[in-house]
Length: 410
Image (cartoon, rainbow, N blue to C red):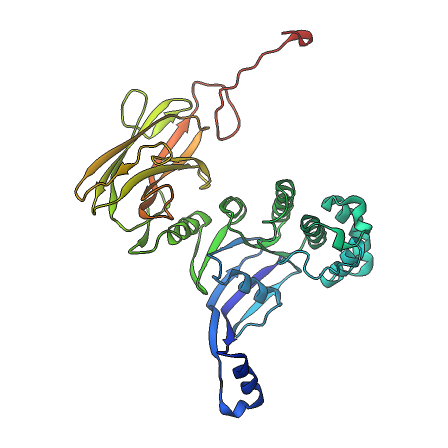
């Protein structure tokens, strides 16, 4: 198994006011520098343990791709050092470097050699590469006749033909059809089960939470936060909201969960209550049982509009169901400072047995990205039991009915 250590890593790019300034600096170095440095990364340090999976998240331009290029050696750091052990496979820009006039087979041979494989090793792996990519006879056609999806399939199949000690993925699977994305992620999961160390950049929350042990948040070139995927993703979610006057804070609850609260505080969540089908407050519900959610809200400033949404997440932090008053056409218009409201949602508990968390969002409209008054993760914890229904598998109870027709006759 491989490991990675990053210490004080920084990457700066030279910026010149004009193209002539670049030429003048090159011709007359004794006249001093004519550029300014733009730091894409600053003083980034972290370790990736053998067999660990790390998710890198952050907005576009945060430095994620730059960091991976430094780790893979395709770019040279300005400061700091990187050390690692094990064979590395990188999926940075799939298909880049393919020669359009060479066939898929010829490009696969060349790409395999660039990954450090001998020609005879690539030739032995070619049947598996063709089978996994599912491009069939096109393997002997020029790559210029391939669609971008076919090139991505072939490039991914070559890069993962042999399990690496360290696998680095930079949004490489965000293109292509849903079937091959699923197939590719399953191969990555299989590598993880076999001990491959993984660094992955993705904007897909499900991918990060389902694959990774830990997440790193990059923001404007700095390593802003690292920790459990759910806590880091919750913080990132708050960071991406409307930033005017917004604050973000996190605290560890008695349950050990990290609660993230963010927003402008122009409206606040005052109390949260859950009721069972008998009207009693409860945190424990039976599968299929009707339940009600009530949330008391205080308005701290004159607002144009006010919406409340809730999101139920499973114990892994994956979204089970979410809705808000905007989509249910129950928006509060023009609330005034000092107003108090109680929002109520009624629904049957159709989730499977397990522990779930409730996130609440007070917003200006449909999304907290448009105006976030308060977003509160882990606003409540609830437990679902199954004592009255058939035993089923999964996170959703569909109350399926079965019938059998002899001979196919109704």
